[in-house]
Amino acid sequence: MKTILFIILIIWGIPSTFFRSKFRKIVYQTNDWKINIKPLFKKEIVGLLFNLYPENKEYIKTRNNYRLYLFVYLIIFLVYYFYK
Image 1: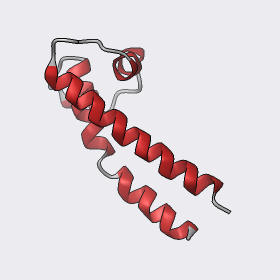
Image 2 (image 1 turned 135 degrees about the vertical axis):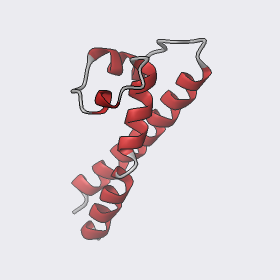
Image 3 (image 1 turned 90 degrees about the horizontal axis):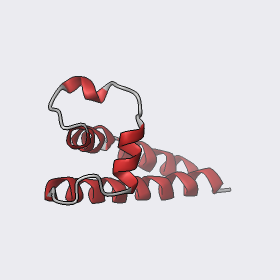
Image 4 (image 1 turned 180 degrees about the vertical axis):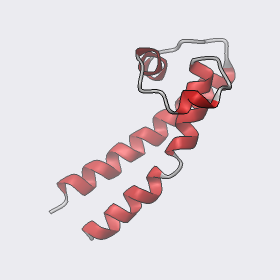
């Protein structure tokens, strides 16, 4: 069972680059591909937890989708980690 959870964790992690890239491009207001290889910054965390651009519907939708994705990822990871 632990192996199956590990495989699910890996498969669920594949779209993370897409979600993070799209979210970061909105938060930093750029289309530059280099935003994907830069380290984590405070603005990204603030943008994930709070509402940086309340008038930007694409930002809100992307942020909420990214939050949901990360929440499910966390749940899968915790189940994997604590599974005996």
